[in-house]
Image 1 (cartoon, helix red, strand yellow):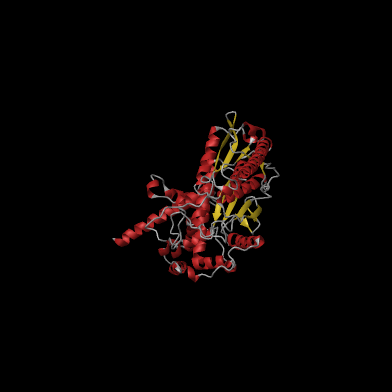
Image 2 (cartoon, one colour; image 1 turned 60 degrees about the vertical axis):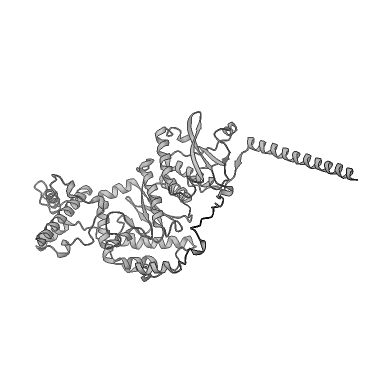
Length: 509
């Protein structure tokens, strides 16, 4: 009987092993056939701004070494740097969804002439800067140039993460100096900080991030219309829907992503939209990101710095310029932006984080009429008169009715206006002798060590002569152009500062 049981055991064991190996062999053959014929993975179609098809995504464990992969290249029709960057960031966001070892390879045949060593080095250097602020790119995924016959024809993005893109939970050995039971109770800390900083004196925001996109766009348009346009903080905006020189349409779009890689992808897709549209159809774009670092302005600013770097880093400065807005934005221009000059920050404080994509040619045209430094200076004076408390309250209530009759005076030309008043009235107003709230951005200031032998008084004389019609060559009153206005403002700022310093020394002596 025992012998029969042994025979039965080995018979069943043999049948089981035979079945197992047959099933395994069949699976192996199927896998091999699949890898040779159609090693693809499907993704939902990406938002297509210009009608270009992204095709399928190639899945390979070793795209550079497997000769079978050459039969199934993914070809992207990008033919500009903006289109290339949009495709690359779409590629990076997709690889984050893959398992460890999987990769996405995309080739760009229309960019072949641009893919020289200098171009590739600049592009990879820019992406390296982006890694510093990214969540998974550079940590759990990476991107490298893809070579065919010794030439770069595309890029491969590879995942180094665990299953489903998630890292395994790290386990640490016991630390005798760490006791989870003695972390402490931090209840009420936020309230205490707010009471110390005075934040509690402002009204709360009832619905900080509305679920309805139309509501977000409606509030944003109200802010643009009443604050940026009607009050004149942006002198090149006409209402909520027109801006630029020449005037064109403002395009509003929302991205609710909170991941940095996803926002990069959306940003570059919007750059492509600007690139491919005419100025009349689309003058400027406001990309609204209500859930992207809403309460972390430092992270948002670091992200913005990488976008600014790309303007010169990969040659985008001739196409676009960027302005950033955030509910907690603070200028880094050397002024007292946390004290007396804090009101100036509201020129860039918006209901939600936003990226304003501008056309470079329009920015340059605008600067010929009103220099950037002068715009900031005039904005600062107007905002200082309104005051931080009023500005913050309006921003939180999403209501700017109280500034309905407030306007930024763009006719204000500092020394030229003072001279004209003096000519008419014979006196200089006391407020014109004050420097309160009158700081230009640091980049536009003149330092005494930089003056050398420059005759700033002569600059003032020439500007006054031109504006008052006193020049010997031309007896007519003429306007100053952009560079002349900037030079005059810089000269007046320096001379008035020096005179104020001399008066202070005389009083001390």
